[in-house]
Length: 112
Length: 116
Image (cartoon, each protein chain N blue to C red):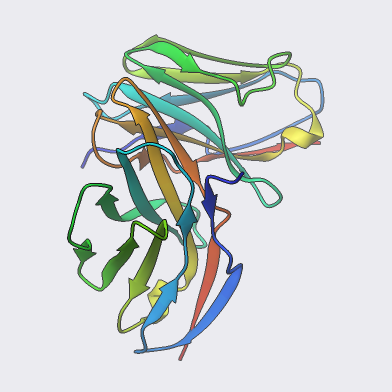
């Protein structure tokens, strides 16, 4: 059963630490999205890639967030340094070019 | 302006009854897609139903149907014969843009509670 895999599922860290979240999209999907979900802001688009190239990262705080796709099977979202306001659930989703987004189970980040 | 508006933060429905979750959207594109996702308390996002802007028939998937009114820019989700397992957050989403540059926008969600 093809699925998007995200790691870690849960992460608790202290303010100022670096956090890296990883995503393995469904094999053959060429579009990858990163979303952040909070109670206050809902689902916010942070960045998205097509064929590994970043197409839009306007939703991402540039000073501390970075997103990359080093190969077709791995997307990463990095926060350095992390802050308490970054606490959220981070979702990765992939798509084949048509149809719906397939979401991973999310990475729940808590920054103390 | 909000791309997707869901005006019902929370709703209650009696088990076995039908319920309609509202969604309006804003786009100037001619080609776009509308989606509904379910997020149970476990947190995963589950795709429910899709409607393309050129589809003339309303989409249906089992107990889910999408009431698409293009002129009013609305895409309401209808759940028939509600079940306790339908209690969840429901998100309306829109895909707009061209093939090589699609963006997906999500509404703020509606929390549905199904009462026994």
